[in-house]
Image (cartoon, rainbow, N blue to C red; front, side, top):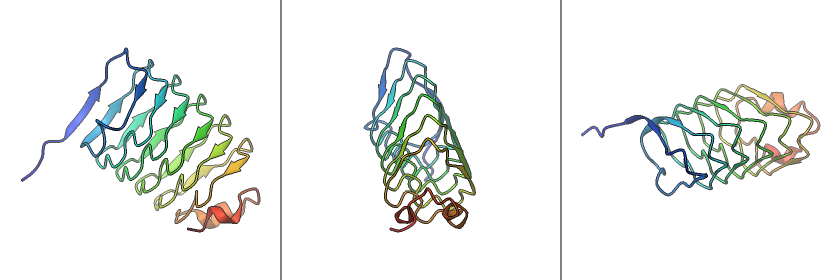
Length: 159
């Protein structure tokens, strides 16, 4: 039996934080985030396997741990320059993500952040990144290309 899929939703404009408790594993294709949101909490879109696109407004300053963990249909994401850190396992298992532009505002990439992003072919690494978490590029499609960047520690590619 096929479950209905929510194609799009818009949340109230008076919220400031989106937590994952009510979104976890929901079937949703697009999520519209109002500019009142300042933080996407831990596990926010965890395992939202139908989510294909999301635009994060510049009002958001933090992406929590496991924020987009195993969003297997997520193809693209815009990270605004208001973000300074990508949390642990933030995009882990986003197997449809093909490219990502990391703004120069980012100084830290958490452990396992892009781990298992098997379709990721294009990723820019700005010089602003001073801290790379363990396994942050483990099983990434473009790992060999990323290894040419000598500023990225070797433990970023290991489990």
